[in-house]
Image: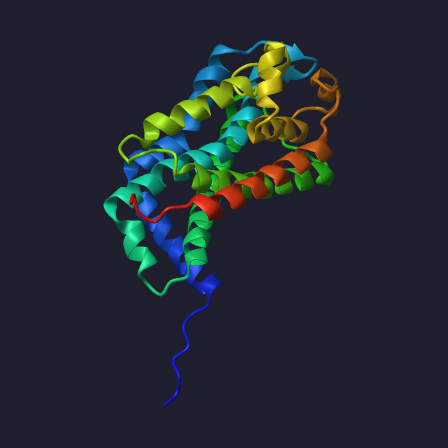
Length: 266
């Protein structure tokens, strides 16, 4: 009798990712919060604050770059750190653990969900930034290369850290109350809502420990003029340091996620 071959881990992960996307789209509140809320924030802040902060750079343009970076944190870290505890409470994870599907396929599915939602969110922010706030799309291929590795590293590290942090909330019902304040504080400290160099020194030093600050700085290097680098703390874009710190956080997130992830509350 011939042996029945099972789909491999990546095929199952792809199928799981498609299922995750369909489930996500059925949750209208999650869709609005994840995809449209950053766009609404950009519309509000961009319309209120129109001052020129440097030659050829308005605060609206500065803010759009920060919101694009923040979108990766919203799509990855925040979304997963809230949804996974809810799935754990409902028993969904425990049932999945009892199926033949490899554990890695579940995480591949989550990564696909994060990447797709992040792409849509970034596309909306770019479109809104260009149409309403004078965001200049880069013409230098090197900047698009930087944008690409920022998206890949930002998505990967945000996903890993979201899975790792999902063990912190004690229940799915209280997950939002635990996770959302962390994201909001990091947004204020990392130069999303305010010009980073105008923040107190201790805030700058604290923010530099976390990936969002570096994602914001990286996105500014893509969408703002090169001469704006002189306005940064180090008077340069620090692309190499950004790459190193995001990679470090990705590794840390993966290690913590592998060692601490729980399939049930017990």
